[in-house]
Length: 267
Ligand code: IP8
Image 1 (tube, helix red, strand yellow):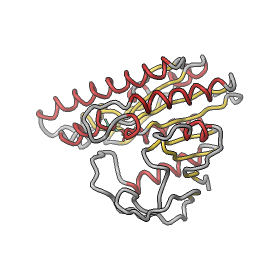
Image 2 (cartoon, helix red, strand yellow):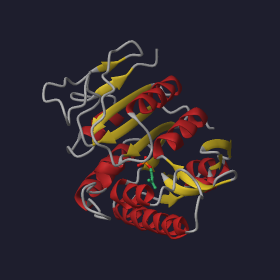
Image 3 (cartoon, rainbow, N blue to C red):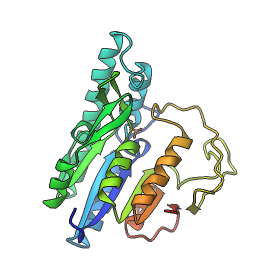
Image 4 (cartoon, rainbow, N blue to C red):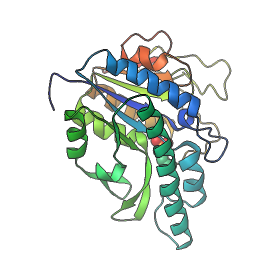
């Protein structure tokens, strides 16, 4: 990768791009304002590139859970679910692409299977040639968590966080930003604990309660998410978790100037 380029890796969480409580409900307002912030960041220097990953939200997790897609093929009644989740994720991706492009970002959709291949729910091999070609020509690759083929289980679910992990390892970004629906990482779950406190600087020794709320996500628990976050922080100059529903937070993080959010220490 060209060392003079400044690469930002951005995850748009499923709870930011969709209303998690309502099946297949797109959050256009959020995505449009995040697209504008990404465009402002890119406009500040011609050496900047952005790589975007988005999650599934109510377009992915509800049916993935109902049909047990992550577990792989056990009976033929799941086939319809696998096909539907893939279709719904493409619908969400197409809406997100529309917002990015209407803000002037030359974004190209690269589904997960054009970057990674999966065996037994884990990444077996990676191919970054399309990501690199897009970046080299000034385009913004956009990939997403998806229902994918699995060479052992027939199919499974890959999360956007795993794609962030692969991409961070390859791109070594200047900045990685996770946009979620809360202000950052808390010392306990803010959904079930009103006295939860926002962690400003998260290190591997920070105490975080791993208590979960009733979850509808099929892609893992807090413990696994934190491990991935630290791995990504090791590959990025700076890593932040911010609230993607609050205007300006993504742009501040991209500029390295976070007033409210969590910075993840790279150790
Ligand atoms: O929302 C999962 O991606 P995530 C995508 O990043 C699906 O965990 C299809 C459930």
